[in-house]
Image (cartoon, rainbow, N blue to C red):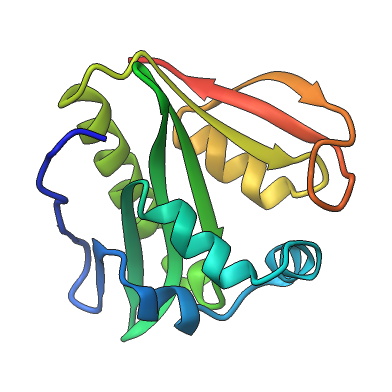
Length: 160
């Protein structure tokens, strides 16, 4: 991953996006889809942290609480994979978090040689699908029995 300064994004007075820390990974209150992943991936929060340090990663904070963690990591030159873990309270801050995440992903793509950014979204997670589309990801195909729980996922990508 290139050496760029991780930006901080200020939203409303009680909201901000800051670089991810280990305490954020352990303080986010997971939703039902994320709880399901945690049941299928041993040491889920350690896995998330290990995955996050391989790239750029942020935390959305609303009213002093971790409401989402997200980032991108290199797969190979020109290709990165985005990830997003929503937490409890994101619904109250979804618009601001979306605007901030969109700006940060655009900045990462414009400041680097990334040709493709991809993300995988569980087919039955309509909220995550809407959020990914709002981040300018487009559905490319369905990956059958792809997830850790054996579920189908959309492969999605965006290009700059």
